[in-house]
Amino acid sequence: MIAEWILEQTTDALIYAGRDGKIVRWNAAASHMFGFSKEEALGASLDLIIPEHLRAPHWKGFDAAVASGVTRLGGRPTLTRAAHKNGQKLYVEMSFAIVKDDDAQVIGSVAMARDVTERVERERAARAAAQTQSQ
Image (cartoon, rainbow, N blue to C red; front, side, top):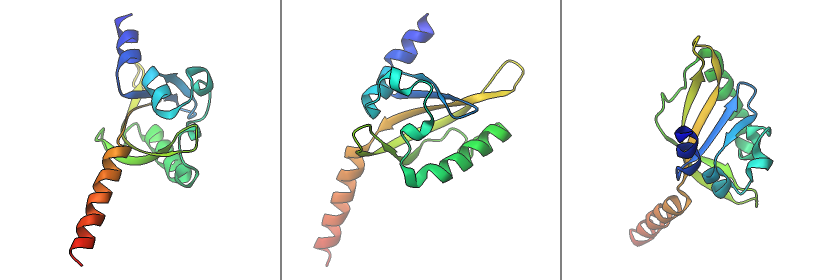
């Protein structure tokens, strides 16, 4: 029971998808970040939160990780784009892990995500301002 409380109450979005890329676990932080309720997300494809232009590379990486049992980044977080239910594009920092059963068989993938849109936009504005001043 404590594991459920931890997963549900963590402030980072937690998304678990089976080998087929369908969402099986979606915590409250994921609902808050992406705008989709648990009922809307469960059973849906991960395409729900992946911007259309990133879907092909996402599925290439997802399929490779599921097939090999390892992620390309080895759990290191990466900055990527995601889509909110209202159509807004988000910058998210995500880390991914392959989930294996007791027999070391891949059963899915888990991602932890944090919305860093404000930080990325602030950094871009600062770079643009610095570039304008240097001209």
